[in-house]
Image (cartoon, rainbow, N blue to C red):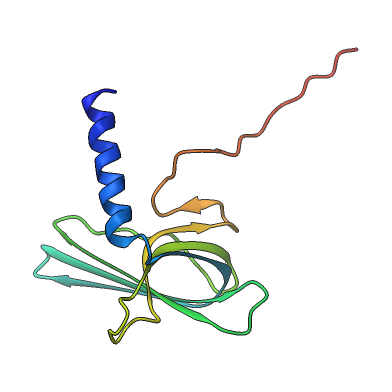
Length: 134
């Protein structure tokens, strides 16, 4: 094992030990999407996205939020519209706290437009061309 692999393994184990019981995933249609951008003195940029998702085969809705602050560069968020099919990966709120029913977004995969907030390694859908032999 190289040093890079050891660090990667250590970070993943530590992360799972700390947040393992709070990691969650929600798949469903977007009921509401609200994206707010604020700029302070042309230097500091704030992005807040709030998504309300109705999971597949469920009557309930799940509220998800994404916050990002950045100096000098504007943070980006993918285009998500009402009715899009999405997979949201994130953390549930802490037990006993106010926002325990909210999900803090780590990644969003829009299955309608096939875009990701953060690209994930793994299966990449590729179009295969088949040649017919005469």
